[in-house]
Structures are given as C-alpha cells and as structure tokens.
Image (tube, rainbow, N blue to C red; front, side, top):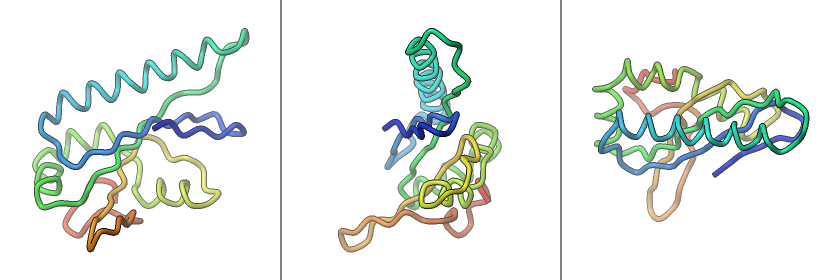
Length: 126
C-alpha cells in the first residue's frame, strides 16, 4: 500500500504483517521497496523531487509478534523510530507524518481495530 498526500512531501510505503519470520530480511526488503518507491517518484516529473518514502509497518498484535518485537527491540526501534501515537494521529487527522513507524492492529470477533499506541509491554514506538 502506498499513502501519498499531494500537499505533503512524504510518500509512505505501508506493509502489513501478521507474523515476523525473518525479521532482518523483512526489514531489508521493506527498506528496498521504500527506496524503489522514492526513486520511481523522482522520475515522474522533470524537476527534482523533494519527496522521500517513509515506511509504515502495520503489525497484527499477537503473542508471537509482540515477543519478536520485544526480542529484537533495538533493531526494530532503529528501523522504525517514530512514535506509533504520532503515526496514528497523522493517519486519522491533520498531524504531520512523523517518519518510519509501526502501528498495531488487533483482530477480535472478526473485527479489526487499529491501535493508537503499541500493545501493553511493547516499548518500541512509545
């Protein structure tokens, strides 16, 4: 998914994951996708682009994803330093895009809910 605001200089590449099996490889692939998106946007006009592609990782809050994020906290925090709360505020309102971020979702009784902060016990994105 690509999120773009014509009035803003940000393009956001969004990837949704229910599980994180090969975290380092997934981080590299997602960075490559965002870089390719930024490069593709550069070629859309004759003038130099000021847009850069940020990354938004949408993670399903499960026991396994929470454990992996906790285990690889430093690596994931370096890749996604922005606050989940700030990213959520930007998605649902007029707040500026904060940069590379993770937002979480929960599935219960067949209903998906985007969380405005990381799940309890997760320090990445606080």
